[in-house]
Length: 204
Image (cartoon, rainbow, N blue to C red; front, side, top):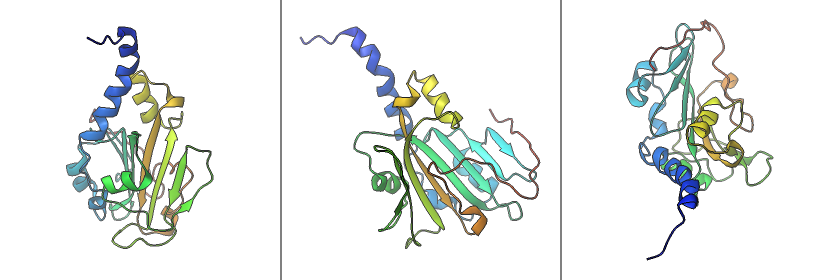
């Protein structure tokens, strides 16, 4: 019977488990379903937020089994989703199109590529995408960085090296010009504007 050294199994097991867990649980979520929704409706889809900011709430962070990180921003005046961002662990064979399709999204035929060093990827649609309600659809493929605490925590929990662990991040934006600014990583700033008082959710 073939023998697989135990020490080698221990070295690859954390990565194998990490690849399986978040990628399969809620892969059926269609991100377009968040469009036009308010906080209560988003909570019904993603669960109770573990953190919120603003009065009324204009930012919520979620622990959802389908994603490593899930964040949603809301217009301060209407309470409707203005931006959503989701991160998931990269898998062999993934492409920007295949990852977007998994969540019911498309970036269109002529996306704009931001300048990053391969194998990193950073892309955003260059024109309205037929069938997509969002003004902007963005996707990136980057390793975990210190300003992404959820991704860093995931690496720590699964005994992974952040510099060698790559994640897809999808960000969608709705409507207003001030919401359409995205950097190479998609941006992570919390919502700004009226009603930006801080308040942390206790749903942990």
